[in-house]
Image (tube, rainbow, N blue to C red):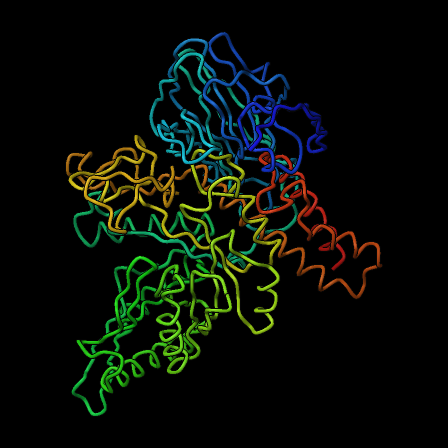
Length: 619
């Protein structure tokens, strides 16, 4: 595919910026909706704050900053943020030492408005941007280089090398109900030879995002691998760590497959009873699920159903219960008793809509009959249990599915619209595929891709997103006798699928890995056998997912307000608001043509926020 070598001009109204960009990054031409981009032409120099020791600049959070890119030519005296209530927003403050220096501390202040409203400094986090060496690029978009991703907390002095960009990630949470207005705060950077105070201006809009998403989410998480890396020694350690991880999921508006892995539903099958049946003890699971759903506001959870059989396109296993196959009367009676109790309990608790059964993964046509039989068995005995399948509907697959979840390139909007008329829902997912030129989850891709993915999700009326794993830190095939350090080796390697022991097959840099263990637990045993009872380390991609979900929630909020106000709106005004619910081509024109510039998204987001505020004033 032809590489871009043109120069284009793009005038950006957001914050009054007008910039000429040229391409120097090696992206394929059809990946962009707008101009070619010079990856050195973003950012704002802070000349009045720069010293003989350190040059300072800032930029939006969606950029991935090259370690050696030159200083920006634009200037700006104040770092700027825009946010709603119950909203997380971030900027990057970049330090470029002229000689090696030690950053001793980065201390945020509270944010205050002229009216006296305050956002506590406890709502501000300063993280540092960790660079990973990518030896093997994922695809044609990536390149062999240092790529930023992990965002460890800045807890101790940091030695910064000379002549290299060293970004800090300044993350601000605006509590729900915070009064609208312009707030001022700062981050004080303390060095051995003095302190530099970075001013930050935060514009808070007059509304708050909901506590619980309208968008459904389903992301894998392996708690037992996390416990292993953290050296959790007992149940108390495991429960403390699990809550720290669930808190990160909740803050990022993502629901794990199983939020109660330490308290499963307990099932006892009785084949010799008359009739054969299942006895179920929900007590531990009910108590823990009630707690986590109340505290963390998750949207969905995966319901494990024993005896279904399952597998994937690679291999599968037949349904059976205690050795009784599905054709036996004992199996049929026990399975019916079991799933009917599950359905009844979930309905009683009000959790039926939240639960989904994900029992077979990515079937091939050879698996369609097997999948159809399993889905029909579920529908026969417990029709209220939602059946989800990671596949797209097609003429050869006649299985009764409630939630279709194709990989993004396989989503067909025309077919989906017909299926929606039948009451079926659509999620979609990304994993090791697709690769360029689609929106992906890889470290060595532009930072905006995951955020744009959520705009594409809104654009296609898709109700939920799924990713197979979030803490895939090691591969049992690639590292059979040891553990991978995800900081030192960003590649995700294949496990299973008949991969020989010791063979490193590439899935892509960062596939299935959005969060990291703390640096002190980057491999099991690193802390000398002591438990590391700290939460996970975030990443640029984990942050961009949250930004995308927040964008989706703003659009959903605008749609709700518009529906309420429609009877009182004049035609032209209604058309204006309706146009803001459309995703502009400047953000994404197609699945493979989209922006890599976060300012385009931020400008549209600000327009949506202004419309929300207008409609709220009219209520």
